[in-house]
Image 1 (cartoon, rainbow, N blue to C red):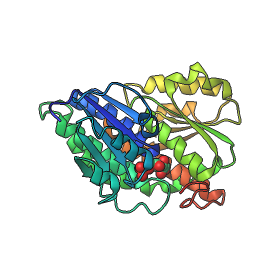
Image 2: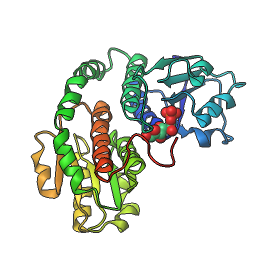
Image 3: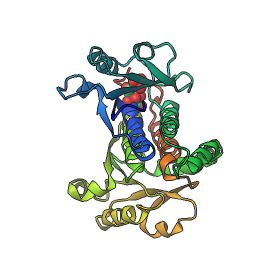
Image 4: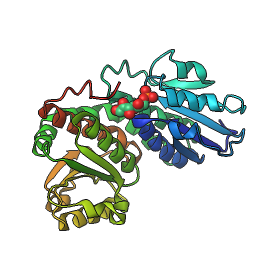
Length: 310
Ligand code: F6R
């Protein structure tokens, strides 16, 4: 990997969103340019692909047809094929030259939950391995990875609060999820989770893109789930929230404990323990999963077997 000058990540669905977090992490920590592509698009693209590029497939099941096809497409290119896979011994695990198993255990439900958390954790560790111990993020990130289980437990301990908020929003038809930086992929993932288990139309957007179209949809019937944690982009997300409120859009915010200044701008707030920006998707992913879960259960759906999905 020391000799590659570009990494292309291919994946589908939730694994693709984990890949987006991986892109930010690897670029920031290791300085290697990364590009994330939907496997279903990658397999048909006619892009230049040099031998100094490596392909990294991310997959929970290791059996997703498009991701397998993406790996097969580069079979004769002489490039390094890597995998971040959960299912041990799966097709993708066998097709790749090297890789890391997530070891999240079997995902028994259709919707990917713990696999997403594990994928992002593994990608953070890959980024650390590719960086140098002299990198200023190296030690804090290792420390925060160690602290994550306790913080995840803190979130699980307040699932009652998340449930109460979720119940208030269970009857809306639409939802917007917004976030910036590392929270942008989390917003995309939050929207996917909500739509696949509750059948509420949900869209994930980079908060800064609000004014370029989605703001037109906002009214009192179109709530927003805003991931508004941490510096340096907190103030900017708050200003997006204000724009939504000015159009009467209800706002649920995910905010860092102690950041009570956000209360005047939001209808509901879910507080989470503070964590380094780079690892926020892991903790925030748990919140958006629980939010989708409680809405789906309240609407009477089987969260383990969403309709139309295998
Ligand atoms: C979402 C979900 C899907 C999968 C996607 C890729 O909750 O489960 O979007 O993430 O089908 O599957 P894997 O990771 O098995 O390749």
